[in-house]
Length: 274
Image (cartoon, rainbow, N blue to C red):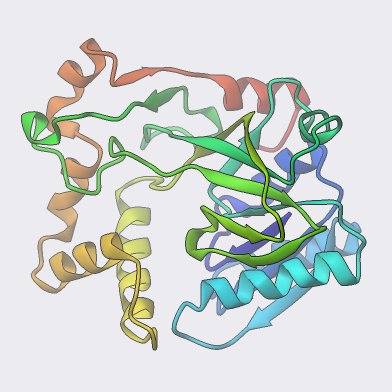
């Protein structure tokens, strides 16, 4: 598994523990100028032998494709990887068998697609105990939702073989392979993208600043949207529209917010630090 991280101390350790328990053999991590406890967590798990490579990337500009591609090539050339997952620290890749190796053991294709589920934030509970997820709301204006709410249509992601790898796409949503052959998988990516109002504000401001320096100035429409609101002094209010706070009861009644304790149950069953 490759991870590109920046100030992810609140979630990174749980991410490593979860995926190790889920069958990941090793991690390659790029830390892009973290200023919290992220670097210390990486060192801790490097000493345990879990983190095979760690890169301290000091550049700005959010060159995600370049940095992830570098990690993929290390996985292939130095560590003999067979399958590679390119993940973010706020993503938890869950297999119903509770072992990711089972998902790839007998497949003949070289790319597996995975659906993404956004988790509904509970400000008063550690994220690993959240037990509500969200579905896409087709008419967001009916609930006064943000155009980039957690109820939006979220693109799936892929994991891929090392053999035939050519290039990863921005956001890890697609991968270019030599003779690509992809199929859907049973893996669900549980996404904890906004872990409370304060986290949302920090993430959007930092991401917006980084994107402004990106030399190609492509992608990241949500970063640009939120960063403009920040400049206008309206970002904090937008968080309520992101999570549908004012329409929670109706969203819940219609099934757009529903119970899903899959990850919380796994953390409890495995006795992980949540």
